Image (cartoon, rainbow, N blue to C red):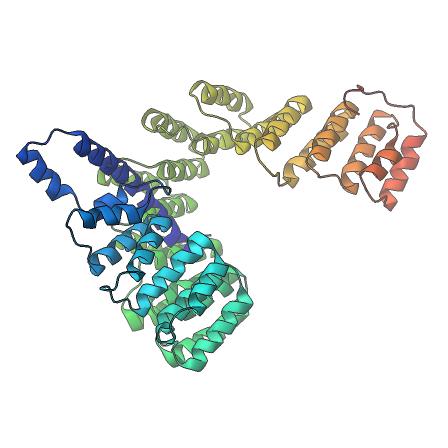
Length: 521
């Protein structure tokens, strides 16, 4: 379940998607204007459209310099006012263009005619942390003039500590803020609450709320965090108490409030309360908050309301010019959750026809549904279709194909897919489910060649355990064979011999030697 912080992050992700096309459009416009002939009417139109903000957005690539663009702007006889620069920094941060935003902040610190306030330095500190790391951000804070070390800069450093998962430093800094009497707004408390909730330290939440209410008043984000804590602890009554307080203090929550509340009710099996919360959520969604629509579709799918899922999808298509890959993935996930395979196939075909990305994560949702429902022939033919469409298989694609082959008891094909999956990532995190299924297959079949191939794959990935060797020994026992040089291989792999291993070794030692291909051992 997504936390309010996570939902806000997804909202930012949608905004980044939306701005991508706009930025590319601006880039093309700047290039077009720079190469165009220059009659007076064209020159006048160019001057009207050319703003400092547009120039900064059109930089796009991090290697391009915001400072050079600023200098050029000023050399052309134009002005760069502080309020305009701050607005540009906000836009760049919103679109995760942190390097260019930092360059503008650093340029402003060198301008004698620009008077910077603590809030400006707070933004500067946050950008340093994002671009250059925690050490540089901490040094920047320490080097600040004393009069600039106040609530906004302290809160910014606190946020950096929380983002860096430095709980001890964050707690110590919060204590200092309380001692200095500068924790007078809910933001620093929200950072600490977010940290405790993310770390599962829900027992510390009441004390933070007590301190917050003593020094200031909660804001909407505070209440949404409290609801998130109730969701983790599955505390329905607590969530309703938080909602009641929110309504009394602030009048109403936002769509995130009711999204979290819906999740709580879903997990508690309270269908009618879920539907009421979803209606409230829907009333609070606007076209500026695209991620809310996906959240709403997913929640409606959780209560098996296909009509509402399809209605929200239709509304989205009427509201927005183009659906993003993420939105297609939400719709596909919702339909597969509802077991509407035919509908999911239609949406996937639509995605193929309109999206240029060929992102394997989208069709993988449908592929996964085929595998889960044991539609194995369809899974294989759909994979071939993906390849023909130019979609490069991802780790998940190969993992799903491995599962499909295991369901068909085709160990060789499963191991081939698993090997491709592992080769597609820099570092493999073992999937215990697949490992268990492979061993179940080879043990059932007494497939000694298959188990030896699997051992080679696991060894190559640095994952060899006593349990792995025990499964190998059980496979040999099933086949009525004794493995070659088994104790020597276990010693080489630094595997501990346990009681079960000793019994299996004793059992297989009385059997004839099992011969496998020399290319495997």
